[in-house]
Image (cartoon, rainbow, N blue to C red; front, side, top):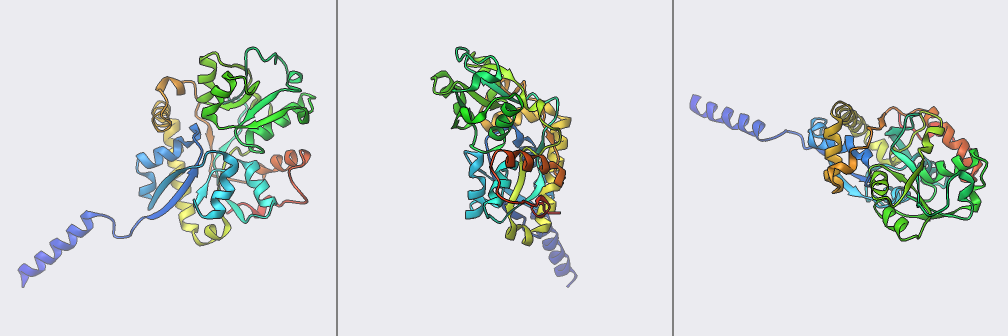
Amino acid sequence: MKRYAVLAMAGLLASFAAGPVHAQKKITFGHQQVFDLAPVLLAQEKGFFAKHGLEVVLKPIPINSQNPAALESGEVDIAMPTASVLLQAVNGGLDIVAVAGYSETIKTDSNFGIVVRPDSGIKAPADFVGKKVGVPGLNAFLHVMFREWLTMKGVDWKKVEFVETVFPQMEGILKAGSVDAVIAIQPFMARIIGSKTGELLSNFIRDMPEGMSITVFASKKAWADKNQDVIKAYRAAFEEGAAYAHAHPDEARATVAKFLKLPPPAVAAVSIPKFNTKLTENNLASWVKIMKSQGMLRGDLSVKNIIVP
């Protein structure tokens, strides 16, 4: 009898050693091909998601403005819309909420820029009148911010033609002369400048208020209501990934370069963005003001009701 008890105990211990007793919660995260993925990729590689009981499946979404549709259709559980895309989707009637902050503007930013074709004739903000500018998503973060920048410089942005494109294609359409300038992000910006296809005109985000949300983590409200523990676990794992990225910037760059299939030198100039899962009304307030001035929002919009505590 004692022998059977020992065997039973051995079998029980073996079952514990084989893996966790409780299955991990599987979620699908929709993303764009950008450097800001660093904390997410590191959270996967270093086991931070697994540590918090999550299995995260990455699903590419080509253009940021497609994030709300991907959430609404159930294609993904969590997405990374820019703040402007989130606010416009909510204002349009979609039941989407921000489950966490992601990245924010800083005054020392060097990861975003206006890149012009050398022969475009663009030397100053006023020169954009009558020109074509490629943006990574109409009414997304960089499009809205660029229009606000033009307004700050006394230029009527309605006299500029905007073309929606994805970051990897910006170098090609600039070289082909399809556009006169692009609003780019690292590491794609460095590649365009390095090949002399374009020249940096301005790191224009430096002129914007600090602490504005750039991207946020969002989900359908119904999903968020049912998955409060998952949201908390996701935030915790992401924060660990962000801390690791700041502590090991070279490894973070290498990880993103590998994922985006870029040569390591292409990401050498990228600075680690400011990541912050804490999201407040202040992070979104400036967006509401800017978007209203651009005619993007109708009526009143309470950002408090959009943020999941």
